[in-house]
Every structure is written in structure tokens, then in C-alpha cells.
Length: 313
Image (tube, rainbow, N blue to C red; front, side, top):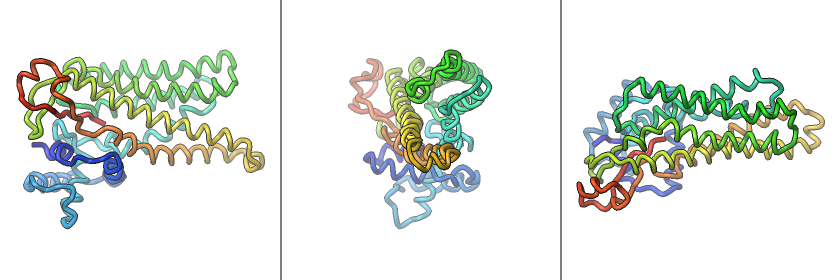
């Protein structure tokens, strides 16, 4: 069985335990760890099938799990490209989120942040989504291009209306863009991974044996990931706006108005730094689904009452 799948199935963790684990997996050093070290870690886990995260006395096992879980895709055992590993989400998207909700004066100033954010989000979702179903490279490219275009258009729409009609109320200037960012982040995941509910993803028993392909499991995997993304980006954009609202009424702002943007950016990074492990931990990495909820052909193929699937990130 793939070591990462074995880990997520056997280590039944609570929400708090998942958060603590993700704080380790999101270590920036996981972005630059060498392929040689990853391969050695994987070999160690493959030759020690009974190795668990609880083996505190063996630091090599602990480090091997950390490298494997943070750099290797659990469906195909392939290395995740560095810029799209889970640890890269914060440094890449935090500046984009900050720029995406800034007040705009013209069309040019808002296009680049929106295009950058939705391009990265789309590729991140495709790379880290479930990879157990058959898909051709050109399908992912065409799908990604369509999702980037549509997400960017709807992301720019409230800003275009704001500029065209000179809307300056708090609702149109601060609240609506944040709401749109949160909703579009979820819709971006649903659209980017739309092939999973259409073609079905692998469902397996507790030993990792594939029972079949389920569209219902694919739907649940995408829905759960979209929910976590809404929580992540919605919270990360909303709290800095609340902070800015009260900060503008302080004496410090009246004396140093230029400090607003640096403090707002720092707040965005801080909130996202806290919310990334929380959002990744809302649902288990390897989801569980009752066999009675799946297709009849899968129910007839096993006597198990509960099956597992990779939710993706």
C-alpha cells in the first residue's frame, strides 16, 4: 500500500491532531528538500510497513513521514512540484489575496492580482486533487484554461461595477469583494476538479485494496475541499478588512496614514498562516464514506461497511 494512504487510514486523528500535524507539513523547508532525501525517506517507510507517526523514539521515521506526506501525491506516488506543494500555498497566495481586495482606481491595477490568484489556485487544485481516475494531459490544460478565464472574469466583475458606477459604500468597496473572493475560491475548486464527480475516483478498503470508482465519493471529495477553501480565503480576507475598519478610526492612523497597508498586509499573512493548517484539517485527508451511500455496483463488490478515498488538498 502507498505509505501516505496507509498513514492517513491507520492514524485516526482528531481535528486538533490534524492541525498540529499540518503545522509540521507546512514547514517551508519542505519546498526545497532534495529528491534524494525524499527517496530515502520513502524507502525507509516502504521497508518499515509497521512504522507509525507515534514512533517518537525513532526520529528518522518522524522525519520520513514529514517529507513523504508533504511532497508525494498519495494517489500516484509522484513528487508534487515544489511551487504547488501544500507548504507553498501561503507564500504564493497571501500577497495575491491582499492585492485582490485592495481598493482600485482603474482596470489595469486589478487585472494582474486576479489573474495571478486564480491561475495559481486552479493549478494548485488540479495538481493536489484526486489523481486516481484516467485523464489526458490536454484535458487538464483545457479545463484549467477555462476555469482560470471564468474565475478571473467573475472576480473582476464587482471591481468593474465599482469603477464604472463609482460605488463607494462600505458594502460595495469592502464587503462584496471579500464575499466574492470566498465564493469564487470554492467554485474554483469545484470547476478545477469537475472531472472527479463525472468519472469517479477510487474507493478502497482499510487495506488499500481498490474496490471500484465512485462518482459519489468524487462529489464528496470536491465538495469538502471547496468548503475548506471558502473558509480559508473568506476568513483570510474578511478579518483584515475588519481590522482596517477600526484602525482607520485610531489616532495612530491619523498621524501615519501610510501605515494602513503594511499593517493590513501583515494581518493578512498572519491570518492566512493560522488558517491554512486549520482549513486543511477540517476534513481528514483520506475521507471515509459508508458503503450504503455509494453506487450499487460498489456495494455488491464488497462486504465492507466503510470505504476510503483520497479527498485531495
